[in-house]
Amino acid sequence: MIATKRLSAFAIRTFTLSAVAGWVVLSPLAAQSGRMAAPSRGGMVVSSHYLASEAGDEILRKGGNAVDAAVATAFALAVTLPSAGNVGGGGFLVYHGADGEVTTFNFREKAAIAATERMYLDESGEVRDNSNRIGLLAIGVPGTVAGMWKAHQRLGRLPWEDLLEPAIRLAADGMPSTWAMQNWLRSLPGRVGPLYDATREVFLKNGVGMYEPGEIFRQPDLAETLRRIQRDGHDGFYRGETAKLLADFMAAHGGLITEEDMARYEADELVPIHGTYRGYDIYSMPPPSSGGVGLVEMLNILEGYDLVEIGHNSALYLHLLTESMRRSYADRALHLGDPKFNQDMPIDRLTSKAYADRLRATIDVQSASRSDSAAFNGAFLNQSEETTHYSVVDADGNTVSVTYTLEFGYGSSIVVPGAGFLLNNELGDFNAVPGRTTSRGTIGTPPNLVASEKRPLSSMTPTIVARDGRPVLAIGSPGGRTIINTTLQVVLNVIDHGMTGSQFGRAIESPRIHHQWLPDRTSFEEWGFSPDTRRLYEGMGHRISTRGGQGSAMGIYIDWDTGLRWGAADSRAFDGGARGN
Ligand code: GLY
Image 1 (cartoon, rainbow, N blue to C red):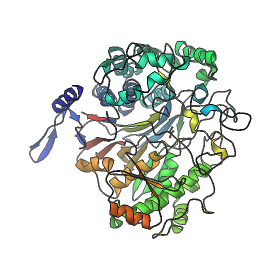
Image 2 (image 1 turned 135 degrees about the vertical axis):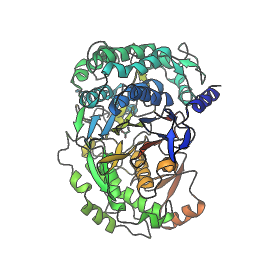
Image 3 (image 1 turned 180 degrees about the vertical axis):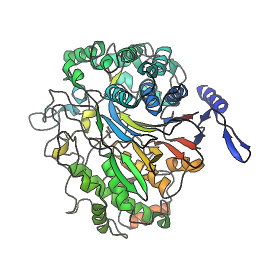
Image 4 (image 1 turned 90 degrees about the horizontal axis):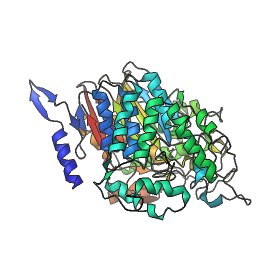
């Protein structure tokens, strides 16, 4: 039933085009329906939940700028997309103003003050009971509220209180539950023990039953938490009742996060990673995300090839992408971590054209190199693929790209009793066992070991591509380590292959591959690559594995010639949507 209702809502709200004096006129409402990109003349919001996109769009219509809408969308996603939207997690925001200003905000979670390098290990040096991923020790001090607050203080236009309004409404009045939510909720009755009591209370009907897709789902405790944030801003989360509820819960069950941890949390404004690619400027996130460095390193290598001539998703094209990925992911694992703990990361070198030239010279265009050869001695990381990305542009062309996460889908699955929000399990992104690196997935390299108040390394790659000082593409994706490669392939689809304007949806939808150095195999999305291509690619010495979908990219392409903004929500995200005005 709900699907029918949503379709008719789409039909009513979908843009209309009519030719007037040889020019295209858009109705004031623009919404994506199906896989086609949606055009708008004013602002645009694209996210993994159509109601969150509508929340951002509502703020744009009130006269808010892109940062205002990004803040509203973040809080709305915390209600509508509890698998990844959050106030209990963290992430990154990249901003490109219409005036040319570019900056980023780091609101990655931090380890507690009491955290130590060996806190996950038992006496024999093994990780105790998966404790770096499950339970209270896996939880980092949340960063999202601080990040949104800082970005708004610096660049917002509307009053902070207005930006929380849509999310509070969605939490208090309710929203239709969806099939995607129900998928996860099926596993919830199996989560037993006092850590999960509040989770079952929030997400199960009357604490026991399943919400059917379309049934109205309310989150009154979360609405109150959001009201405190609305009233007191940053301190409405990091001090007072919310901080106390969280810290008391931690103390009662053996967790580390205290009221002092909460009070000390601050987001950082950071200089973006900047690269160039075929005349475009690439702006993305610096460490503690590896996304920007990885993306720019791969683009620099690929700039040396004529990718149009080679052909989109041909075997040779996929081979060259793979070899670039292999080299970039090796550097990622060996060199990157929280900058406050790694002052000597060779970022300038890794993102330089000269270094890319040297790496390109090691690539054989006919056959695969091996990740375990002497050229690659190191390790790889395990990261969950549950995260979410959204993109925003306002009427002036100010553009925001945000990726944030709880790590696993629904994070730790632990809701703070009385506060109604899920906590992350982000500290699983640290290297848990110092010194132990194996080809099966354990990593022990130093830059990303656990430490007091340290942030774990991320792959999140919120990115803005610009030309002549103006943003033309906002893009990013969830997907753990695959994020950087998903973002890379969309950027290539736009810049090299011209999937722009009304064809922008193709840039988002095209099938993708992923290689992460180790293990030495390439995952192909199941649909969209021909058996002939796979055979030729394997003939070069690559190993292939197959997966359903890779990431879900949420992007906006800005065409400055026509003034149109094209928003496309990846169909890989079940509830995603683009909304514009
Ligand atoms: N937790 C996924 C990431 O930070 O990349």
